[in-house]
Length: 195
Image (cartoon, rainbow, N blue to C red; front, side, top):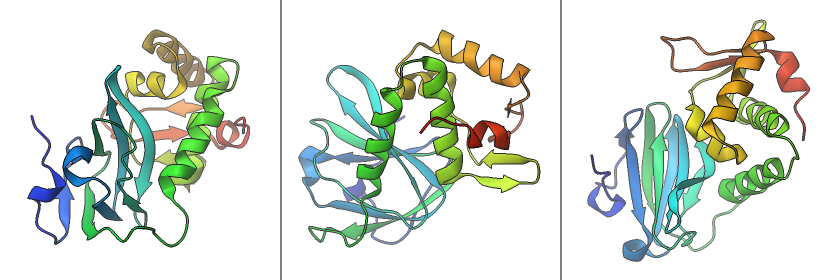
């Protein structure tokens, strides 16, 4: 299944279903590709020559992002929940904070923690603090990430990530409903996260 290119889309609002992606081909767009996230949560990734795509940021409603030739190949925006974006004309520099730069710094800090358990703990805490919400006795993350994706983010194997998630579940710090498309974390896990 191919992802549509930004240049092929109308300049009105674009809706992207969960699991679908929007491709920013930096060779075609240079620094002219820009979007505003209107609704939902998305994962921004960069395809590189070395293999699988690398996560560079998570975006949510209100975020503006402009392609700055971050990678040699292409950048992709994957919808983690139903996503509504508005393609924008590039303006050179956006006012305010750059969400990609902020996420890159946070993810880099997590990757420098010594143990895989600390890295997963810090990542889950960061995701909930930035993108989740408190719902009664739990903190909800409105989307689910696969064990492979979590492993990529913390620099470990899927097997190690699965083992760590099982430990969090047994300690009743994490719930991932079989039928749901979200994750639920205990506030104690979020509050005690490294970083």
